[in-house]
Length: 360
Image 1: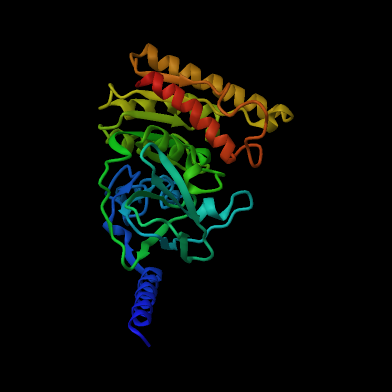
Image 2 (image 1 turned 120 degrees about the vertical axis):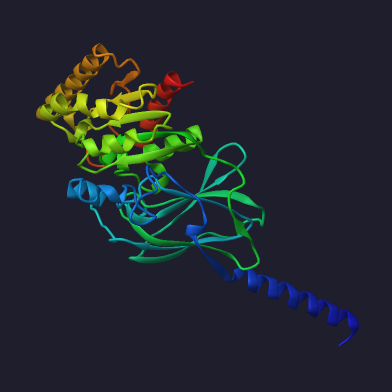
Protein backbone atom coordinates (compact mmCIF):
# COMPACT_ATOMS: atom_id res chain seq x y z
CA UNK A 1 0.00 0.00 0.00
CA UNK A 2 1.51 3.32 -1.04
CA UNK A 3 1.59 6.53 0.98
CA UNK A 4 -1.36 8.06 -0.88
CA UNK A 5 -3.51 5.00 -0.18
CA UNK A 6 -2.49 5.02 3.48
CA UNK A 7 -3.49 8.70 3.80
CA UNK A 8 -6.80 8.06 2.07
CA UNK A 9 -7.54 5.11 4.36
CA UNK A 10 -6.61 7.16 7.42
CA UNK A 11 -9.02 9.90 6.40
CA UNK A 12 -11.79 7.35 5.93
CA UNK A 13 -11.07 5.86 9.37
CA UNK A 14 -11.07 9.31 11.01
CA UNK A 15 -14.35 10.26 9.35
CA UNK A 16 -15.81 6.92 10.36
CA UNK A 17 -14.69 7.40 13.96
CA UNK A 18 -16.19 10.88 14.14
CA UNK A 19 -19.43 9.64 12.61
CA UNK A 20 -19.56 6.80 15.14
CA UNK A 21 -18.93 9.17 18.03
CA UNK A 22 -21.53 11.55 16.71
CA UNK A 23 -24.06 8.74 16.43
CA UNK A 24 -23.50 7.85 20.08
CA UNK A 25 -25.83 9.62 22.49
CA UNK A 26 -24.70 11.33 25.68
CA UNK A 27 -27.49 11.85 28.19
CA UNK A 28 -27.95 14.82 30.52
CA UNK A 29 -30.42 15.04 33.38
CA UNK A 30 -32.88 17.85 32.58
CA UNK A 31 -32.66 19.04 36.18
CA UNK A 32 -29.54 20.85 34.98
CA UNK A 33 -31.63 23.23 32.87
CA UNK A 34 -34.20 25.96 33.58
CA UNK A 35 -37.84 24.93 33.84
CA UNK A 36 -40.44 27.50 32.80
CA UNK A 37 -44.14 27.66 33.61
CA UNK A 38 -44.34 27.02 37.37
CA UNK A 39 -46.47 29.18 39.65
CA UNK A 40 -44.39 28.06 42.62
CA UNK A 41 -41.05 26.32 43.11
CA UNK A 42 -42.26 24.74 46.37
CA UNK A 43 -43.62 21.58 44.71
CA UNK A 44 -43.30 17.97 45.92
CA UNK A 45 -41.24 17.09 42.86
CA UNK A 46 -39.76 19.29 40.16
CA UNK A 47 -42.18 18.45 37.37
CA UNK A 48 -45.57 19.48 38.72
CA UNK A 49 -47.63 22.64 39.04
CA UNK A 50 -49.02 23.01 42.57
CA UNK A 51 -47.03 23.70 45.75
CA UNK A 52 -46.82 20.91 48.31
CA UNK A 53 -48.68 23.11 50.80
CA UNK A 54 -51.91 22.53 48.84
CA UNK A 55 -51.79 18.73 49.09
CA UNK A 56 -54.15 18.59 52.09
CA UNK A 57 -56.05 21.73 51.09
CA UNK A 58 -57.09 21.29 47.46
CA UNK A 59 -59.87 19.02 46.34
CA UNK A 60 -58.33 15.66 45.34
CA UNK A 61 -58.98 16.04 41.60
CA UNK A 62 -57.35 19.49 41.56
CA UNK A 63 -54.30 18.16 43.40
CA UNK A 64 -54.11 15.19 41.05
CA UNK A 65 -54.33 17.38 37.94
CA UNK A 66 -51.63 19.60 39.38
CA UNK A 67 -49.27 16.66 38.77
CA UNK A 68 -49.86 17.09 35.02
CA UNK A 69 -47.06 19.10 33.44
CA UNK A 70 -49.15 21.29 31.13
CA UNK A 71 -47.33 24.54 30.37
CA UNK A 72 -43.97 23.42 31.75
CA UNK A 73 -41.01 23.75 29.38
CA UNK A 74 -37.27 23.13 29.58
CA UNK A 75 -34.74 25.58 28.11
CA UNK A 76 -31.25 24.66 26.92
CA UNK A 77 -28.78 25.26 24.09
CA UNK A 78 -26.74 22.78 22.10
CA UNK A 79 -24.74 22.41 18.91
CA UNK A 80 -25.71 18.76 18.50
CA UNK A 81 -26.79 17.33 15.16
CA UNK A 82 -29.33 15.22 17.04
CA UNK A 83 -31.63 15.87 20.00
CA UNK A 84 -33.19 12.96 21.87
CA UNK A 85 -35.31 12.68 25.00
CA UNK A 86 -35.87 10.08 27.68
CA UNK A 87 -38.89 10.65 29.88
CA UNK A 88 -40.75 8.65 32.50
CA UNK A 89 -44.49 9.21 32.75
CA UNK A 90 -46.41 9.37 35.98
CA UNK A 91 -49.42 7.41 34.77
CA UNK A 92 -49.28 6.70 31.02
CA UNK A 93 -52.78 8.18 30.49
CA UNK A 94 -54.95 7.29 27.51
CA UNK A 95 -58.05 9.12 26.26
CA UNK A 96 -60.43 8.47 23.39
CA UNK A 97 -60.53 12.04 22.07
CA UNK A 98 -56.92 13.26 22.40
CA UNK A 99 -53.69 12.10 20.76
CA UNK A 100 -50.94 10.46 22.76
CA UNK A 101 -48.49 13.09 21.50
CA UNK A 102 -50.62 15.76 23.18
CA UNK A 103 -51.41 13.80 26.33
CA UNK A 104 -47.91 12.53 27.13
CA UNK A 105 -45.47 13.49 24.39
CA UNK A 106 -42.74 16.13 24.46
CA UNK A 107 -42.50 18.91 21.89
CA UNK A 108 -39.26 20.56 20.73
CA UNK A 109 -38.90 24.13 19.44
CA UNK A 110 -35.79 26.09 18.38
CA UNK A 111 -35.23 29.85 18.27
CA UNK A 112 -34.56 30.89 14.66
CA UNK A 113 -33.53 34.45 15.48
CA UNK A 114 -37.03 35.87 15.12
CA UNK A 115 -39.46 33.34 16.59
CA UNK A 116 -39.79 29.88 18.09
CA UNK A 117 -39.82 27.33 15.26
CA UNK A 118 -41.33 23.87 15.69
CA UNK A 119 -38.69 21.14 15.33
CA UNK A 120 -40.42 17.84 16.03
CA UNK A 121 -42.30 15.81 18.63
CA UNK A 122 -41.11 13.07 20.93
CA UNK A 123 -43.74 10.37 20.55
CA UNK A 124 -44.65 8.35 23.64
CA UNK A 125 -44.77 4.58 23.35
CA UNK A 126 -44.99 3.42 26.98
CA UNK A 127 -44.54 4.65 30.54
CA UNK A 128 -40.78 4.75 29.93
CA UNK A 129 -39.88 6.52 26.69
CA UNK A 130 -36.76 7.15 24.63
CA UNK A 131 -37.05 8.95 21.31
CA UNK A 132 -34.80 10.66 18.81
CA UNK A 133 -36.71 13.90 18.22
CA UNK A 134 -34.53 15.31 15.42
CA UNK A 135 -31.35 14.22 13.64
CA UNK A 136 -29.10 15.21 10.72
CA UNK A 137 -28.95 18.88 11.76
CA UNK A 138 -26.05 21.16 10.95
CA UNK A 139 -23.83 21.29 14.08
CA UNK A 140 -24.67 24.91 14.90
CA UNK A 141 -25.39 26.15 18.39
CA UNK A 142 -29.12 26.70 18.87
CA UNK A 143 -31.46 27.73 21.66
CA UNK A 144 -34.10 25.05 22.35
CA UNK A 145 -37.34 24.82 24.30
CA UNK A 146 -38.87 21.44 25.14
CA UNK A 147 -42.54 21.41 26.20
CA UNK A 148 -43.64 18.69 28.62
CA UNK A 149 -46.88 16.67 28.39
CA UNK A 150 -50.29 18.32 28.73
CA UNK A 151 -52.34 15.58 30.39
CA UNK A 152 -49.86 13.37 32.21
CA UNK A 153 -47.06 13.86 34.67
CA UNK A 154 -43.31 13.39 34.26
CA UNK A 155 -41.20 11.84 37.00
CA UNK A 156 -37.84 12.14 35.22
CA UNK A 157 -36.49 13.45 31.93
CA UNK A 158 -33.09 13.52 30.23
CA UNK A 159 -31.89 15.18 27.04
CA UNK A 160 -29.63 13.29 24.65
CA UNK A 161 -27.07 14.84 22.30
CA UNK A 162 -24.13 13.69 20.17
CA UNK A 163 -21.19 12.55 22.27
CA UNK A 164 -18.97 15.19 20.61
CA UNK A 165 -21.50 18.01 21.02
CA UNK A 166 -22.03 20.43 23.88
CA UNK A 167 -25.11 21.33 25.87
CA UNK A 168 -25.57 24.14 28.35
CA UNK A 169 -27.67 26.86 29.90
CA UNK A 170 -29.57 29.13 27.50
CA UNK A 171 -27.68 32.29 26.66
CA UNK A 172 -30.77 34.26 25.71
CA UNK A 173 -33.40 35.12 28.31
CA UNK A 174 -36.30 34.05 26.13
CA UNK A 175 -39.14 33.68 26.75
CA UNK A 176 -38.99 36.72 29.03
CA UNK A 177 -39.72 35.57 32.58
CA UNK A 178 -40.50 39.03 33.94
CA UNK A 179 -44.20 39.74 34.49
CA UNK A 180 -45.50 36.28 33.54
CA UNK A 181 -49.06 35.76 32.34
CA UNK A 182 -50.95 33.38 34.64
CA UNK A 183 -53.95 31.53 33.16
CA UNK A 184 -56.56 29.82 35.33
CA UNK A 185 -59.26 27.63 33.87
CA UNK A 186 -60.56 24.33 32.59
CA UNK A 187 -59.66 21.40 30.35
CA UNK A 188 -59.40 23.80 27.42
CA UNK A 189 -56.93 25.91 29.38
CA UNK A 190 -55.00 22.76 30.30
CA UNK A 191 -54.72 21.93 26.61
CA UNK A 192 -57.51 19.51 25.71
CA UNK A 193 -57.36 18.36 22.96
CA UNK A 194 -54.20 19.69 21.30
CA UNK A 195 -52.38 17.14 19.16
CA UNK A 196 -49.04 18.06 20.72
CA UNK A 197 -47.85 19.96 23.78
CA UNK A 198 -46.82 23.13 21.95
CA UNK A 199 -50.34 23.67 20.60
CA UNK A 200 -52.25 24.50 23.78
CA UNK A 201 -53.37 28.13 23.69
CA UNK A 202 -51.20 29.04 26.68
CA UNK A 203 -48.10 27.68 24.96
CA UNK A 204 -49.02 29.40 21.68
CA UNK A 205 -49.46 32.67 23.59
CA UNK A 206 -46.10 32.19 25.26
CA UNK A 207 -44.35 31.87 21.89
CA UNK A 208 -46.33 34.70 20.31
CA UNK A 209 -45.41 37.10 23.12
CA UNK A 210 -42.04 35.42 23.82
CA UNK A 211 -43.05 35.64 27.46
CA UNK A 212 -43.51 33.10 30.22
CA UNK A 213 -47.09 31.89 30.56
CA UNK A 214 -48.10 29.80 33.56
CA UNK A 215 -50.86 27.24 33.01
CA UNK A 216 -53.25 26.62 35.90
CA UNK A 217 -55.87 24.78 33.86
CA UNK A 218 -57.53 21.84 35.64
CA UNK A 219 -59.63 19.58 33.47
CA UNK A 220 -63.24 19.63 34.68
CA UNK A 221 -62.13 21.41 37.84
CA UNK A 222 -61.74 25.10 37.09
CA UNK A 223 -64.36 25.72 39.76
CA UNK A 224 -63.10 28.91 41.43
CA UNK A 225 -61.25 27.13 44.22
CA UNK A 226 -60.09 29.85 46.56
CA UNK A 227 -56.72 28.25 47.29
CA UNK A 228 -55.85 28.65 43.61
CA UNK A 229 -56.71 32.34 43.82
CA UNK A 230 -54.43 32.54 46.85
CA UNK A 231 -51.63 30.80 44.95
CA UNK A 232 -52.00 33.18 42.03
CA UNK A 233 -52.11 36.18 44.35
CA UNK A 234 -48.66 35.28 45.68
CA UNK A 235 -47.22 36.04 42.24
CA UNK A 236 -47.10 39.78 42.79
CA UNK A 237 -44.68 39.91 39.84
CA UNK A 238 -47.38 38.78 37.37
CA UNK A 239 -48.12 40.96 34.36
CA UNK A 240 -51.63 39.64 33.75
CA UNK A 241 -54.13 37.20 35.24
CA UNK A 242 -56.42 35.40 32.76
CA UNK A 243 -59.57 33.76 34.15
CA UNK A 244 -61.12 31.22 31.77
CA UNK A 245 -63.27 29.09 34.08
CA UNK A 246 -66.84 29.40 32.77
CA UNK A 247 -67.18 25.92 31.15
CA UNK A 248 -66.55 24.24 34.56
CA UNK A 249 -68.93 26.24 36.77
CA UNK A 250 -72.68 26.52 37.07
CA UNK A 251 -74.77 29.65 37.55
CA UNK A 252 -74.74 29.31 41.34
CA UNK A 253 -70.96 29.05 41.47
CA UNK A 254 -70.56 32.06 39.19
CA UNK A 255 -72.83 34.19 41.36
CA UNK A 256 -71.49 32.97 44.71
CA UNK A 257 -67.76 32.60 44.08
CA UNK A 258 -66.55 34.97 41.34
CA UNK A 259 -66.37 38.10 43.48
CA UNK A 260 -64.60 36.39 46.38
CA UNK A 261 -62.14 34.67 44.03
CA UNK A 262 -61.19 38.04 42.55
CA UNK A 263 -61.01 39.68 45.98
CA UNK A 264 -58.45 37.07 47.03
CA UNK A 265 -56.60 37.32 43.74
CA UNK A 266 -56.32 41.09 43.84
CA UNK A 267 -55.81 41.73 47.55
CA UNK A 268 -52.12 42.43 47.00
CA UNK A 269 -52.32 42.97 43.26
CA UNK A 270 -54.66 45.87 42.49
CA UNK A 271 -52.34 47.04 39.71
CA UNK A 272 -52.21 43.69 37.90
CA UNK A 273 -54.88 43.53 35.18
CA UNK A 274 -57.38 40.66 35.16
CA UNK A 275 -58.86 39.38 31.90
CA UNK A 276 -62.13 37.45 32.10
CA UNK A 277 -62.83 35.11 29.18
CA UNK A 278 -66.31 33.96 28.25
CA UNK A 279 -66.99 30.32 27.47
CA UNK A 280 -66.69 29.57 23.78
CA UNK A 281 -69.98 28.89 22.04
CA UNK A 282 -69.65 25.17 21.49
CA UNK A 283 -70.29 24.28 17.83
CA UNK A 284 -72.76 21.53 18.67
CA UNK A 285 -74.87 24.02 20.64
CA UNK A 286 -76.17 25.26 17.28
CA UNK A 287 -78.17 22.02 17.35
CA UNK A 288 -78.34 21.33 21.10
CA UNK A 289 -80.73 24.02 22.34
CA UNK A 290 -80.21 23.18 26.01
CA UNK A 291 -76.43 23.57 25.71
CA UNK A 292 -76.85 26.90 23.92
CA UNK A 293 -79.07 28.24 26.70
CA UNK A 294 -76.71 27.03 29.44
CA UNK A 295 -73.62 28.64 27.89
CA UNK A 296 -75.45 31.87 27.09
CA UNK A 297 -76.79 32.18 30.65
CA UNK A 298 -73.37 31.53 32.19
CA UNK A 299 -71.66 34.09 29.99
CA UNK A 300 -74.35 36.62 30.88
CA UNK A 301 -73.87 35.89 34.58
CA UNK A 302 -70.11 36.34 34.28
CA UNK A 303 -70.57 39.77 32.73
CA UNK A 304 -72.88 40.75 35.59
CA UNK A 305 -70.32 39.67 38.19
CA UNK A 306 -67.59 41.66 36.46
CA UNK A 307 -69.82 44.73 36.55
CA UNK A 308 -70.37 44.20 40.28
CA UNK A 309 -66.62 44.12 40.81
CA UNK A 310 -66.13 47.29 38.80
CA UNK A 311 -68.81 49.01 40.84
CA UNK A 312 -66.95 47.91 43.98
CA UNK A 313 -63.81 49.71 42.81
CA UNK A 314 -61.93 47.05 40.85
CA UNK A 315 -60.94 49.12 37.84
CA UNK A 316 -58.26 46.95 36.25
CA UNK A 317 -60.68 44.36 34.88
CA UNK A 318 -61.05 43.41 31.22
CA UNK A 319 -63.52 41.22 29.38
CA UNK A 320 -63.18 39.04 26.29
CA UNK A 321 -66.39 38.03 24.53
CA UNK A 322 -66.69 34.59 22.99
CA UNK A 323 -68.05 36.06 19.75
CA UNK A 324 -64.91 35.51 17.67
CA UNK A 325 -62.87 33.27 19.96
CA UNK A 326 -62.80 30.20 17.72
CA UNK A 327 -64.39 31.42 14.49
CA UNK A 328 -67.76 30.49 13.07
CA UNK A 329 -67.18 27.53 10.75
CA UNK A 330 -67.68 24.84 13.40
CA UNK A 331 -64.38 23.16 12.52
CA UNK A 332 -62.45 23.91 15.70
CA UNK A 333 -63.32 21.12 18.14
CA UNK A 334 -62.72 17.41 18.54
CA UNK A 335 -66.00 16.61 20.25
CA UNK A 336 -68.04 19.80 20.11
CA UNK A 337 -66.29 21.15 23.22
CA UNK A 338 -62.54 20.54 23.34
CA UNK A 339 -60.40 22.32 20.80
CA UNK A 340 -58.37 21.09 17.87
CA UNK A 341 -55.06 22.78 17.03
CA UNK A 342 -57.01 25.09 14.74
CA UNK A 343 -59.27 26.05 17.61
CA UNK A 344 -56.30 26.76 19.86
CA UNK A 345 -54.60 28.91 17.22
CA UNK A 346 -57.74 30.98 16.75
CA UNK A 347 -58.31 31.34 20.47
CA UNK A 348 -54.70 32.37 21.07
CA UNK A 349 -54.91 34.93 18.27
CA UNK A 350 -58.02 36.56 19.74
CA UNK A 351 -56.59 36.53 23.25
CA UNK A 352 -53.35 38.06 22.00
CA UNK A 353 -55.26 40.94 20.38
CA UNK A 354 -56.91 41.64 23.72
CA UNK A 355 -53.66 41.33 25.67
CA UNK A 356 -52.03 43.90 23.41
CA UNK A 357 -54.90 46.28 24.18
CA UNK A 358 -54.40 45.75 27.92
CA UNK A 359 -50.60 45.99 27.97
CA UNK A 360 -49.24 47.17 24.60
